[in-house]
Each structure stands twice: as structure tokens, then as C-alpha cells.
Image (cartoon, rainbow over all chains, first blue to last red; front, side, top):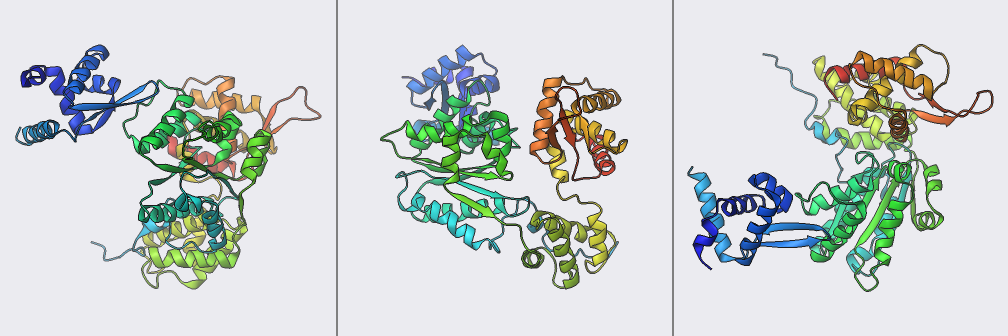
Amino acid sequence: MSIEDVFSSKGRVKILRILSEIGELNISEIARRAGLNYATTNQHLQVLESYKLVRHKTFGRIRIFRYNEENPRAQMISKLIEFWEETK
Amino acid sequence: MSRYSSVFKDESKLDINYVPHTLLHRKLQLNLLNQFFRFAVENPGGMTQRALIMGNIGTGKTVLSQHFGLDITKEAKQRNINLNYIHINCRECKGSLFMILQRTIMKFYPNFPRRGYSAEELLQALMQILDDKDAYLILTLDELETLVQNEGSDPLYNLSRIQEDRINAPKRLSLICILRQPEHLENLDPSTRSTLQRNIIRLDDYSEAQLEDILADRVSLAFRDGTVPTQTLTLIAELGNCERGNARYSIELLWRAGKYADASELRDVSPECVRNAVASVYPVVRKDMIHEFSLHEKLFLLGVARHFKQTDSVYISMGEAEESYALVCEEYGETGRGHTQLWKYVKTLSAAGVIETTVSGVGQRGKTTLIGLPRVPAADLEQELVKILMQGGR
């Protein structure tokens, strides 16, 4: 697992930024906000989930993804995003 | 600059959504409701409950339920129980179980997807959310008649049944139903009806003296000291009593009278301000209610009002209402909706109490719905609707 895998993809960074700001969303809404298609968003989310940066809950057919605030790496990334936005 | 200072100190205390700390003249009913749902704080998950609150407009049904909700969730919090009280108005949800469940779920997950799922899926999702969060829910369905008229027995049946299917799981969902017209219970299937009728809380109309107490309480919260004389309160209570003890109407009248006093830069709210206010408040057809109707519901209602302005008859036929609506649509440059949609509007407006419907009987060929406008002068309703439509209240 390398840091480049996460940050080398613009789509994954976008998703991380959206989820760290909003908290939790379903795939369609993440895709809409990130300007990506459903399948790509789904793939990115799977990668991010494998790194434990996001988690998901399933309600029947409904999948809700949320930022994994419990993960120390996710916490640091969230702080980085926040700092980046503040000092833009 | 004017030196005039308002008679109000906090007019939000007269808002329709304000829940007072003390609920006057409803202590018995509040205690009863607390008894029905005592298990929710003493033995959560052990059982589930359904209660029905019935009463005329302005008898405190909504405020009773909301007050109870605040009390019980506070007590549950002290006992570390995750008990939630959610109050949903079925009319605001257009009588759709889907929208009711969606609003309920969005209290837990604000970004829950808005479409693409059935009401049944949402109900399952709600139960799963409650399980995940180890939460209990008292769901209040206000203005239940709209839901029953729109979807019949099924929603209440499903909401009750979902518990029965989960045999060994904790019971998490309880219901409070608020109903104005008891005749709507007839539209429910016998089992749902009997379950609901087991715990009924009936709210009688407020008496004049009770209304005066309620008004005095609100005056102390909303107005500056000494700005509302006793004779003003008595007059409003009298007027409220004429409207079958309608407290909501009385409070709206009080607020409006205060506004007239402010507009005339008076030091106190005189009975004359109340008389002015009376002319602008219709007890049953409130402005906020009209605002909530969709554009075409407003246009249809405008057509009905205009037709009644030109006729002395008590009822007009559905056909006449449709013709009138077509003319209004032409005037506002809107494409008229079809008969089936208009029929739905009639049902919505009737459930809201703005119009009354009956079926034509002897002396008329065939069978048609007759529409009546018993509670508000047609000319005033027309004026109000035109004003809202002009303001772009679509």
C-alpha cells in the first residue's frame, strides 16, 4: 500500500475531499459531485475502502459511503484538506 | 427616525410551530400519552405502541404530541436510551408513505438518496438504521387523513406489520397518529382500525375561559408588559370560542392584532386592532396552508372560488369546477391538468378542509362529485389566492 496510489488519482482525491466535507453520501451523489461516472466512482471507492479511508453501509440496494474518521491516516488527510482549503 | 417601539418582545412565541414549556388544560391527555409510552424509557425494545389523538382544528393535537416528544426524549437521554421522536405532517408529504419515510430517514442520514427506491425498501432501511444505531423511534403522523385518503390502509398496516416480522429483534418503532376527522378511520381495514382505536386520546374544544388562559400565557411570553389589555384578551377568547375553541386561530388573531397595533404605532393592542385582525384571518383557511398548495392546486381553488362568486348555489359540480379551472389556466398561461389529476387536487383540498365534497344524488343525471366552499367567503379566498399567485407563490 503506497501513498502514491491514493494521491496520484485526481478522482480519488476529489472523492476524499467530498466525503471529508459532507461525511456520508451514496455513490450516485458522490459521482455527481465529483463529476465522475458511476462505475469509475465505484472503483475509486473500492480502492479507498481497501485503504480503510472510507467505509460503507448497505441498506437493501442502498449503499452509503462515509469518511472513516476513526482511521488515523484518514484523520491526517482530512486535516490536510481542511488546511489546503483554508490557505487557498 | 420613528421612536416607536414594538408591542412585541418575542413574536416567535406566537409562531405556529412554537411548543410552549407548559401545556395548559391538556395535562390529563399529556399524562395519558406518557402512560401509553412509559415502556419506551423503562423497557425499550420490549414492546411497541400505537396511539391515536383526535380532535377538531386548534384543539392542541400537534402541540400535545410535540410536547410529549420533547419530554420523553429528554428523559430517555438522561437514561442513556437512544429514543427519537419524529413528527411528520402527512399533508406536507402529499399523503405519500414514501415521502414520509424519506423525511424520517433523512433525520438520521441527511444525505440519504432521494429517489430510486420503493416505500417498502425505505421501511426496511429505516428498521436497519434503527438497529445499527440501537435507536428507538416514536413516529408521529400528523394529519393522517391525507395519508389514508391517498394510500388507504396499507401504509399503517405495513408500519405495524414490520415489527411483527421481526420476532426476536427489539421492537423499535412506535406510532402516534393524529386525526381530525374520525370518519377517515372507516377507510382502514378492521385490524388496523382496531389496533389504533385501542389507545385514543380525544381532545375536546377549548372553552372560552381556557382560551383566555392560553392567550394570557402567550401574551406574557410574546408581548412587552402591559401592552395587551384584559378586554383585548377576552375579545379574542370570545372570537376563538365562536370558532369551536380554536386556539390556533386565537393565537394567530393575537399576533395579527399586535401587528395592527405596530402598524398604527399604538402603545397597546386595543380591541379595535383585534377587529381589524378578524377581517384578515380566516379560521380554517390559513395563509400558510394556501402557500403549501402546488401551483395547480391554487389555480384549481381559484377557479372554484370564482365560480362560487358568480353563483348562489351551495355546491358546484366537478365539471363546472373544471371549466372554471380551464379559464384560470388560460389567464395564467398554464397548461391545464387532466381530470384524474384534478380529482387528486380535490382530494387534497378536501383533506386540508378548504373545500368539502359530496356525491350528487337524486335529481341529477349520473353521478358526479359536488364541491362546496363552506368555511370562507369566495371573494376573500379569490383575493388571497390572486395575491399569492401575483407574489410568485407558486
